[in-house]
Each structure stands twice: as C-alpha cells, then as structure tokens.
Image 1: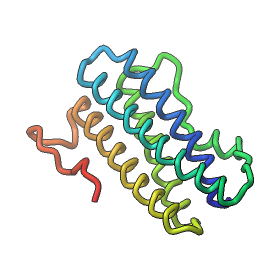
Image 2: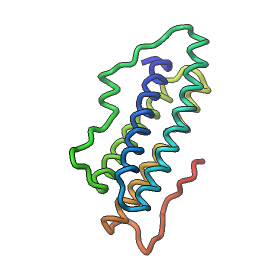
Image 3: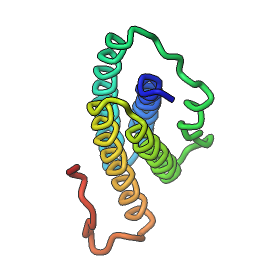
Length: 158
C-alpha cells in the first residue's frame, strides 16, 4: 500500500473511531465514562484534521485519487457486539486503538515522505496513549491494575 492509500485508509479509521466514541458518549450513564468518550472523540476529530491536511497535500503532489481498500478498512474496525455495555465499550475501544496504532506504525515504516512518516509515528503514539487510557478505565472498573488511584503511565506524548 502506498502512503496516499494509507492516508485515505487512516481517514476512514479516524471517521469510524469518531462515530464510535460519540455514540458511546451519548449512551454512557456514568459521567466519567461520558467525559472519557467525549475526550477520545475530540482527539479522533483532531486526527482526522491532521490526516486530511496531509492527504490533500499528497493529492496535489501526486495528482491521483487512491482507492480505499474496503476489505482492509473493515479489518481495521472492530465490530461492536449488540447490547453493548460500558465495560464492553471500553474493551472494544481498547481493541480498536490497538489495531489503529499498529496500522499507523506499519504505515510509518512504509512511508516515502518524511512528513508522512512523522505524522503516522506521532499518531501511533497518541493512539497507544488512548489504549492506555481505556485500559486504565477498564482496570479501574474491574478493580485491577491500578493501585490506590496511582496512574503508572502518562497521556503525554513525547
């Protein structure tokens, strides 16, 4: 897959993640969960903007419109179960963020342009931080992993 195709696919992934988190925020009964899902939705919207800018820049440079591999796009979106509970939602979110960060890491390695490589690398780090946020929420709800409200990771990206 060339970098223009990877950018087009990244746009699809970000759009799906944005929709997913907004839907979860609307359904969330717990105020902290609602805030977390809204935070993640805002982040995904910002990622969309970054990818869109780079996509347009590359379109102008290459003067070609890539086709999005629909089969691969479907593999990069976790299917949510019916009657999704908030705990299920967090688990689905974790799976989705992991798929996304792994895809972005791979796309960064295959990128031809330094600016595209850096964009994918940066967003891979952010998606991994999203995974850690969701994992912390899951551990907190399940009463595993975080002791005495101590957070052993940072949401800040280097």
